[in-house]
Length: 492
Image (cartoon, rainbow, N blue to C red; front, side):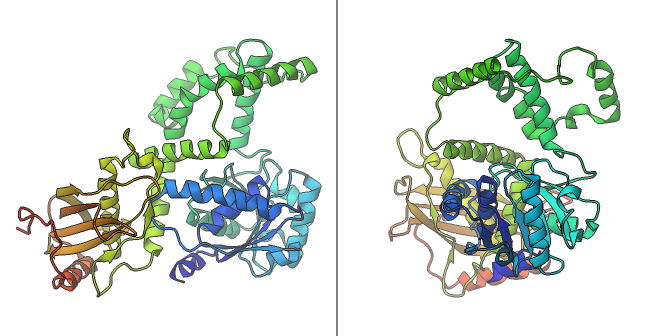
């Protein structure tokens, strides 16, 4: 219940979803896997099956995306009407097909049935919110919340208010989506297509012109994008490298509108001959570079890899992922007990951890023990605020012992024991074992030093962290010394 209470404080205990297609199913997965209850209305006969398929894909992707334990899944309830979907929820997310009339009808019905103050959001890709809220009884809490496919993986959500939306609704919605691991971007003025889709549309138009004029094929265009600026923009955006106003001015004077490189003012005639050519090229591309089935798995695996890489740099979408993980750790059940070593959550070994001989790569043991150390430190209060004000721990020394081979699919758990602690040191011993084995697969012994945030030098722990660390060391002092401890690692 602790996880649900933390989410409730941010205003997301339950949501109502109107539509369970590709986007609605992605929203369902995003909310459910963050511990939020979902009430889904979709008259399609296969709505539940469709959402469950997306949810299965999301579970698989999240297991690869983060080692931090997720909260207990929310409950998915299929309802028979709009009124049932919006009853007793904090937020309504409409994801019906892109028909203005249909969306207006659903949103008007939701507005009549929802409790006063309920946030009502549309996933529309392009309709302005003032058009959508025209038939609503109370449009003050309505806004567009435009996500990107797959919703459970891509962090951006564009928030756009209508003429009669109160500013407070935007702030409430932003807090909810951020708690779900997303990056809310507030669109300052109403505009068709918002921001990202307008940029995407411009690139798509130019790409179709290149194909139309026989200057490039779809295969060549994809390569031009994915091997060049797409990687750079994914990491740092378009304009952060301008180096301030002077650099931006120089770039505009040198490049902007100086060269006739684009045909963005026109669009090609979409005749049958052109459509046949595009279709043929798409078929050739699929044949030349086939992706494994299901395609969603390969797509998600690639996104996991990109996000992990960005997280290692603490930048952009990677920073969003790291912040979400910190929130998950803060909401996780307390690890500390008075009966033995700390028990970390059980994890399943993914296939991507294997090396060329089919065994788990040795670097992953370090990653697992490092994650256990992070969880322990979080449990005694070493969170983001503490690190920014007082500092944190760094590893002074590590001894690893590899005792048994691990394979993909193995369910493993780490037991962590504090062998000693003082004002500046933390001496830890980790035992990694399969869920069903008594014999350890590996052990890791660590000595940590506490460094000050401002000085960068070894300093004493501060505030309640010191008390919790020393108390935990006292609790573990009477436990048997683990087999394999080294006489060379000790408090000095």
